[in-house]
Length: 202
Image (tube, rainbow, N blue to C red):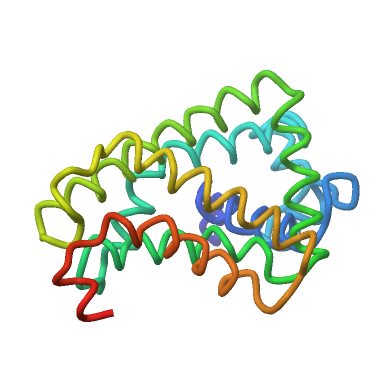
């Protein structure tokens, strides 16, 4: 008798969901689409998550919980805290790989803002992101990349607002790649706080 096939892990299912959701808006996919990508049946997903909404809540919760790990991945191979901040901005800007892709992300954001369960996890993700940005600002000060007069919490908030707002502005203008647009705005925010040593290298 052949052994029973192992159930797909949440990680595999979430990866499949992310691939599908990156291409399609909320109303354009079904659990069957996710199941096919993950090598499962739609019934298996219903049994595990209950519904399409249940899967989305679980996925959003997982993303929020993994925020510190995501920043650790950004740190890998980066020489400096400012380099990690730039990598964060680049990663965020990837939502604007195309106007259509950004439109999909905004459609999901609309759901995140109106569904209390989704919003709770999105809010947790934002708070965890702010914590990581504050850490990076403090590390940049300690590394001599930013001046010692920087207020870490204030600059972290400015970075967060700039990156998200910059991507929205790019959606209106669509001049060049979104990554380049967002990076330029981030550099403008950082420039007044960069140490003289870093300015000379720039």
